[in-house]
Length: 315
Ligand code: MRU
Image: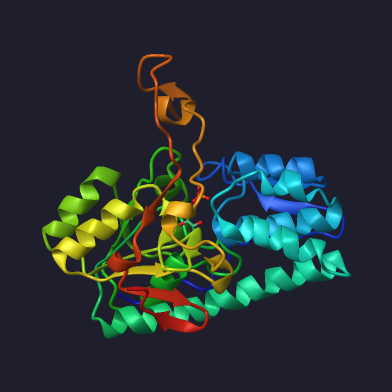
């Protein structure tokens, strides 16, 4: 494949504008590119809760700027429990002598991390001969400042050439793959195909993929990984097929204070996210649901963890 616009089409999902946090409203994508201008902790917490801003590193940076504008740490930390980046950024800014300078430092660190993750991850996957790659949820420039994490690795591989069309899962219920990953890949002109989540294990088993790469919301002391619900099933399928299952994320997502995946609080979201899609009911009103937003993949299933510092093997 010819070189793509993988670096030229720069997506800036979050910026600080002197007296406001400006966010690309991810609930409106891919149909409308609308920006929110937020000036209070309540507004930012609400944007985080309803996934107008999302992805572990990005909610950390959003909360950091919210702490500079309107320091309400407990309100911000309560917005989403699973990604460690959120609470960690809030605590870091709260303890800093200059809150805005600290928020800007966190933002800059995440941007730099994303470039390093892209390079290390692409080296690893290219070294493994991976050309047919599947990813889950959204881990690009919408989810982390700079180029993102797992999707940044994919974009870097596309830039280097030789990548087959990327398989993106829908990522029900909120369709981060169908709405956001497809939007980013289209902007970057990276060939891709969208699949329903339940098609992934069968395609992996059929030999259609060389590797799976995903992001992470919390990596515990023993190397277990919480990420978007559905990740665990992909890891099991990858192991059964004997292909690499790679996790990419900045070190700000590693949480040595949580011993194992069993100790992670998994966010349970509104039942209506399962009962409906795009405002259309999918089932009988009032149907009881389970809606865990994340699951935990044991370290034993993870071939490599890619951070800005390089590659480690959690197992
Ligand atoms: O619920 P979301 O959309 O915030 O979930 C996002 C994910 O699970 C990502 O894989 C993770 O945050 C890493 S983003 C670089």
